[in-house]
Amino acid sequence: MDSTNSNAASAKPAAELPELVSFRNVTKTFGEGEGAKVAIQGVSFAVHDLPQVGELIAIVGPSGCGKSTVLRIIAGLRPHYPPTQGEVLVFGQPVAGPSADRGLVDQKYSLLPHLTVLENIGFGLMLRGVPAKERHERAREWARKVGLEGAEAKYPAELSGGMQQRVAIAATLIIEPKVLLMDEPFGALDPKIRMQMQGLLVELWKEQQSTVFLVTHSVEEAVYLGDRVFRMAAKPGRLVEILEAPRPDEPPEAMRKRPWFTEMTQDLLRRLEEDAAAAGNLEGTRAWKSHRNGA
Ligand code: ADP
Ligand code: MG
Image (tube, rainbow, N blue to C red; front, side, top):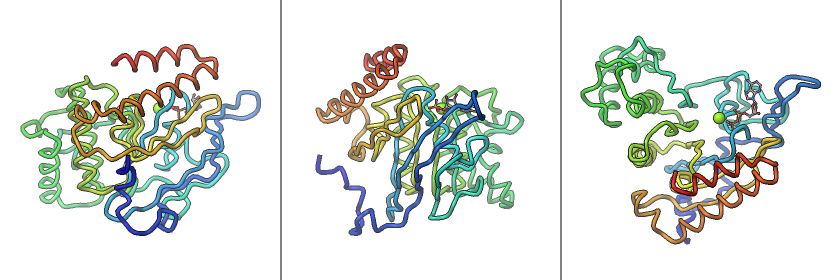
């Protein structure tokens, strides 16, 4: 596994590079007193600004362990932002709210139903005052990149889940956010389209060199796409492990056949099952087991 750090193409060790996103002992509690609920506790990590590459962080963990909370705090979106304790820095500055340098593709695709595919894709550019002609050209280009040629005039209700997801991804990538936040973006897709979308994401991400945080339920997807995999556990939500994984240099079907890949995903699954069992969550153990069996 000597390719683990092939992404760190620069000569500088990561510790000397500027920090792009950092969490320092971040805790988020919802509510107060008796009914208070700890969403995440004492989460710390740093993602460095690797020149010309960008890093993909995959986040896995059981439902309710705070994955969306982490993403939404980075995005500066309430009610998750601001954290109750600790420091969150983006580009070395405390997060002060949402901004175009951080784009979130949500669990729900959040398309605007009364706008066409092209208008949805170009919506962020419109908000930024980009003139109509340029906006349409760029939106058309992005529609093509995500395989939506010919569907530009359709409305979201006329599209399949997979197509809606592509619109949402294009609508976020067109803004060229330095930090791309994706919350289970492929969750609703069938396995074949899901694999196509993974490949597409890798291509677009290489092209844009942005830093990506990807929340996923699939351990295989995490190991395939992630440069690092963050394993989170629940009760309270926390970050328990950071795993390094080689960067994909072949299609998912081929990479899945590599012995190291099987070993890494099986190991990770086992630890997730152990977390679930330790938390007394048999439901969670079953959920990961069913993933292992090819879901
Ligand atoms: P995940 O995305 O891993 O499923 P979340 O980040 O959505 O987890 O949630 C973490 C915990 O915080 C959960 O226990 C959830 O119930 C709680 N939580 C999330 N959002 C809110 C909210 N707006 N109000 C109260 N509790 C919340
Ligand atoms: Mg979530």
